[in-house]
Image (cartoon, rainbow, N blue to C red; front, top):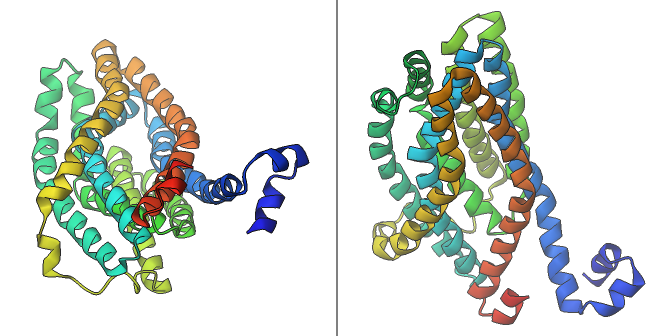
Length: 325
């Protein structure tokens, strides 16, 4: 470890003045940050690629996709991701405490809760067009947005499951699988968009289907990698009745996390609804800006994810001094 840290802190002045424990922790965090950052950027490229392809169908289609993305993020993704953050907290601390089989139970509990949460999400999404019209959106743009939203319904469970897969792995210090699966999913996403829009000429329906498949790809590929490499063996003992217990303690973490994530995302996404009240051109432009902003946001997010995993592991092991470091 000392050799690895020395390579990182090559400057002798820095090497002498930073405590060894801090250097080791920085080394671990930076080693995790690279793959985490790359996987997050690759995740963001999935909707970015869909945006580029649907933009060639016209401003009204791009505006419809932007409005659909904002609606899905506000009503479904933000809340679901927030609920999944409880899995981050519990898995990192449980794994740090070496209670490995309990990690699998927490994952099962998270899966059940988020799969049940799909039901109200579907109810909201099915009726999105009526809500958008009440908010003063252009009728044609709202119609196109509903096409994207309806096509996205099968992808909601996949989106939530992928979030839990990532939490399950990264809080055990396993980072590379999500990067590999995201890279393959991006290749499949690009090919799918090209086939649906250029070869089959399916238009808006093809773009909506490709957007849905992009979320399913990344979930299925990561699951296949976990199963192939047997990354679940030490923490998964099969489905347990224990996963049906103590949902209250899980929700005590999940609800505040969900509210925090909603407030964070809604600041961005409400701009899409306001832009849609102006014209489809403004909405299309606003969506393109959000896509670029999202990619730049991933840089600090990668460091944050690595630090959270390390802090959780340290707290689970009872090492509060290392958690503070």
